[in-house]
Image (cartoon, rainbow, N blue to C red; front, side, top):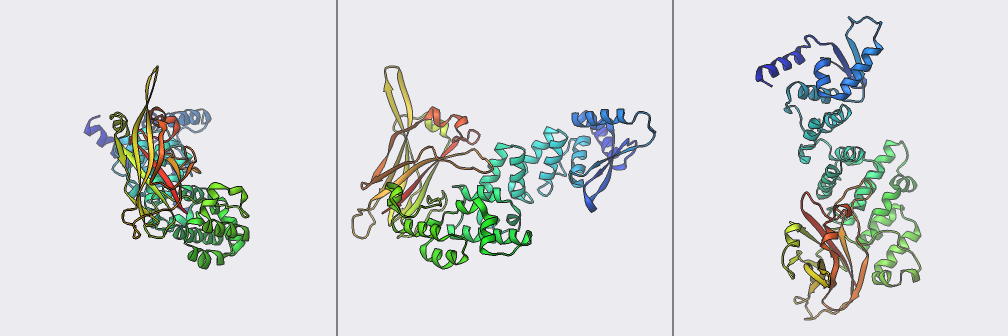
Amino acid sequence: MSKSVIAGLKLMLSTGEYADVHFLVGDGEEKELLSAHKLILTLASDVFEAMFRFDAKKEQGENAANCHVMEVPDVEAEAFKVMLSFIYSGEFSELNGDNAMAVLCAAKKYNIPDLANASLQVPLSELHNVFFAYAYACIFELEDFSGQCLRYICQNATKLFESDDFLQIDQKMLSGLLQSDLLLFSDEFQLWKASIRWADAKCRQNGIECSQENRRAVLGPALFKIRFPNIYEEDFSKCVVPFGVLTMEEQYGIYQYNSHPYLYLRVPDELLYALKFPSHGRIFDWNTAKGNRRGTLALEIEKLSEFAGEKVGSRRLSDAVHIKGVSWQIEAQIRQKRNSEGSTDYLGFYLWYDASNEEEGYWRNEYSATFRIVWQKSKAANSTGTLSDRVINNTKNWLGFDFFITFAELMNASKGFYNKEEDKVTLAIDVTVK
């Protein structure tokens, strides 16, 4: 389309000249009357076409000279104007972080794919409310975009959880975020405090007292996604227990786990109190204190398709994590099984430790490890998962699996472990030292 034609269309939109339809857009005091032209809207959207066709039949016998006003209470006026601007000019100049999600809703409502896609390209850091964006992504089943939002929230959780926007999310989203292994936070105790802050805000929003019972009620299932066993015992005793949100049985289960964590891996059914909360670490919560008994390692293998094509024995190593005074690493290695029909490549998955810096000159502790592959797919209430709970107890300086999973299965998109677009996979190991 020539520049002069586009300029003419933009002028018609701005002046309302020859307009044959008006939209009363918005709700409450935010309503705004916007003029447009049925023919132009019909060419851009099959939804507008069907709407005007139905409207024409309805108006038969009425005064055709009247310019019809259509009410649109479920779209923001600013977003509707951005949509009209795109329809008339093909430009995205008015699209920004403040209106992107509202424009996405309008584009979805009127089936304008190019505008919807443009809304999803706005950098997440510029969005007015990334929690709002994540909610919309889940509603519209935008799997890739919801995954991007989830990763952004997790990687910036410390800052975002302090915002007022965090206090507006619903219980389901809070539960999903707390369940994620990818949540980047200084420690689990700070997550607990953020959750209580959220619970108090919900109590006030609902006009109820911020009591022990009400806090527990509004947290609901989200309470059981907090990894209380990973909170330092002093913080737990002095700062968590006094809130009264946890029952006595739940507290006893946590105290018992902290005293004998390895027993839960061996004979959990023989323990007096059940542990009702997850105890494995979060991917990015790498605790480097010398005395820590638990930690989580992660290895993100980028360009997985290239790695899978390398020769047998090729490997990747994670950064070191210090647990109980020694250095731990994940190793991923290409392994191969041969049979009469040919050969199959496997992922070898190993855990190593280096105790060369131990003060006594040796290290002899029993430890256990759970090997996991982190889901890359995003769901509203389930953002990470475990391939299998392969728990091993050991006293030597390495352990692992030569044939953990075939590369064909690992890179099968339907399994959800492989991010094809980014060509990567994330391995994780939860370590507990006796």
